[in-house]
Image (cartoon, rainbow, N blue to C red):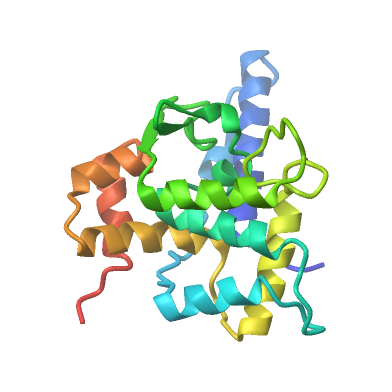
Length: 224
């Protein structure tokens, strides 16, 4: 058996904490031994996706290993571009619906905060974002499609489907150590370099505290 990763170990610990808390509430135990389990947190991913790497991966989305154009390439390029331009999480862009786009904004309730702070973000549709959405409309062939980023039959891409296409594109582009999750911190870091304030980024990233946002940027924005 392979050793579970740090993140999965934390998941197991949290499940045990919940289990023993349930047992204590019903009088089966008087303590919660899982609270004493000390785990090291997963190492921070400080990998910055350069513009060159981004475009290598983006171009590789279009051409498969056989040298022919991939059917999903144009749509997945739009997925990448929306990730960067909105600085939102991959899941929230993957499951983005047209009904969330109206009155000149994209309204997102991040999946990570939906059950905690419930924070929302309203992203203005800039000319760059509008251009990507227009490309999506040109690619899509399913009438009344619900999802912005969708497959040929109109259904949304699964997490595995996106991840698999990303892994193959990175291999063809010969880019290592970058996942779809790196696009969000890269976009935020670029925004700081372009003059956006931490307060503006805090609003955009929908973090529960300003300190989280500062740490998010500081990890990547090493001085040259």
